[in-house]
Structure formats: structure tokens, C-alpha cells
Image (cartoon, rainbow over all chains, first blue to last red; front, side, top):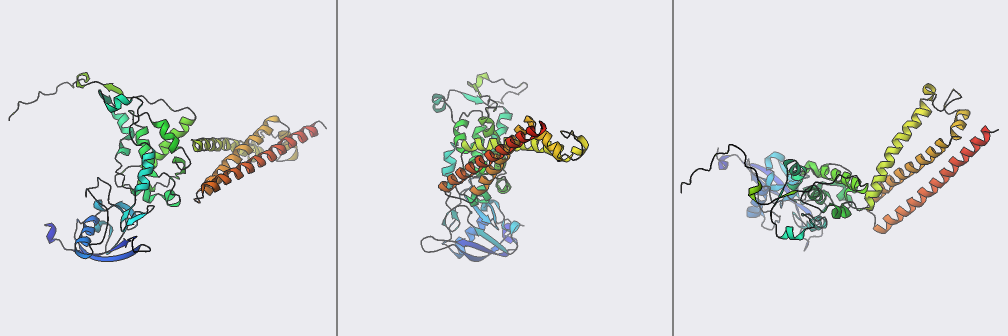
Length: 277
Length: 127
């Protein structure tokens, strides 16, 4: 059946509104809108903006769960508005609020700056001693599938802030680094091209670092990309302790591959077919 | 990295407590069966058996070790719980100092008690 012919159901959106220029505190405003099967919460917000209240503000970009901009609290769960179908989580009512543990800029827009400042403090990039190679690479670094597997899932993080919103430790102490930056630190610590673990240890092992985590596991439960930040933090703790005791195994650095000629072609690969154009 | 150091010793103290408490349970509560360090028979906590153990340097050292690790483990745990209250850095520092002084004080008192009991037990055994 075409999308337009499916029966619409009326759902009440209870949305947290707040404009710091003239509101003293956030308040809830309710909008009733017709919802069809397949409509996402993001579609619902667009409907409200176009038909009911043009002043509603929220943040979004890709509409396909890739950019991490539309993280918000839907029926009390931090998740992505673009990735959540309304009828999957609501029968008659749906509460929509900005991500907790962040300041509100306006309506559903949280101020993620504090998260990105913490993220930046952990050097979330490849750190190497050989600056010349880093700036002007002369070849590729080989990583085995096992070496890739060690950090791959943490590389799927889209920095939406849902884990930070779900973290009970962060809710009580905003100085705690939080799951996203710590998982990012683990992602680069495990990367065989990286040599910055000792530098990151100064931040991850400090007072508000990995040891503040109580392993509630909420960050991993809510992550819309299936990343497991709680696991990353436990790995981080273990590595910090082993580094302190000088018991950490030396990470085998990546081998350099200079150009494609060094690779071994697999046998029995058919020749490239002749060009047709 | 300072917190890493505290955490590592907290974990290590927990393991030592586990071993020493295991020995304690074995000697004090299964003593009727094992008769371990209870050469005078009967209850492991009888005066004669207690004086026998207290007079041995191994037990005195173990008492002091258990006291030290239990105080460190417990007070670091208490510090962690107190820090959850989102305190100002100056208050956190004051708590750390107070707990350090408290821990050292209790450790000194307990060490003095263990050494004194050791001396009394040895004096008693010499008549």
C-alpha cells in the first residue's frame, strides 16, 4: 500500500520548549499530529515546524543515523530522532526533550561544547613521533584484521552524545570525562598506528577520568550505533593499571607498506575484462 | 596518573584482604576441624590458643598487614563515595588529607596494639 494511503493515527507530542531569551525555565508544550506508519520522530518534528509551530528548534543534518546531530530524549530514552519510528515507541503520547547532562541552547538543542572539549583533551587522533611521515606519508601502514578488530567498534561512534546523556556518573558530576571521550581514547590507544597512549593516560588516569566510571552500562545500552563505551572504559582501566605497573605488553607497531608492488596478489584472480567504452 | 596509582593499590589491597580473610576464616572458624595454629585443642579463640598465635612474629606481621590493607581499601572506598557528592576541589583535597591522617592514626594505634599483645604473649609464655 502506498505510504499516503495508510491510515494516520493522532499522537500527542509533549515537547520541552525553552528559549533562554524570554523563558525562565523549560516548559512542556503539546502538539497533536497525524502519524503514519514509517514516520520517524524527526519527520514528526518537521511536521510540527511546517504546520503547527514554526518557532520549534532542534538540530539535525543527515536524516539517516550517520551524523549524530539529532540525539534527544524520547520517552525518557536518549536516542536519535531520525532513527526512531514514532509508532514503535508511542501509542498515544510521546515525550520529546533535549539530552540531559547538557545545557540547553534552545528547545531540543543541547550545548555539546563541553563534550567536545573533553573529547579534544584526549587527543582523539593518531599521534606519532615521526611528524614527517604523518604530514607527508610515503606509504601505507599495514594492519591485520585482528588489529583492526581491536578498535573498530569504537570507531563507529558518531558523537551524538546519547551515552553522555544516559551516564548516571555524569549526571552527578559534570567534571567526569564521560563515556564518549573515554571510548574515543580507547579507540586510538588500541590503534597500532598510534603512539599516544602515554600522553592520553595523563588525562584518562586523572581524577575525573576512567576510574570515576561505576560500570552502570547505560552508555552501551542506549548507543544507537551499537558501540560499547562501558567495555572501552573497562579496557582503559586495565591498561592504565598495567601501564602503572609496567606490565603492559608492548604494542607491535604497524609495518610500513611502500606502494602496491609489495603486496602479493591472490592466485586465480581472473584478468580484468576488456573495456567496452 | 595519581588516581591510577590509588586505584591499583586499592585493587591490590582487595586481593590481599581476600587471602588474609580466607586464612582468618580457616584458622578461627574451621579451627575445630583443622586445629590449625590451635595446639591446645578446643576453641580456636580460647585464651591459650590466642596467646600461642599472638606470640608468633608471623601472626603479628599478618595482623599489621591486614590492618594496613583493610584501612587503605576501606578509606579509599569511602573517599570515592564522598567524591560522588560533587564537591569543590578544595573540599576533596581536605577529605583526602583528613582520611590520610585518620588512616595513619588508626594504623599506628593498631600496630602498637599488635606489638604490645605480641610482647605480652611472649612474656606470658616465659612465665
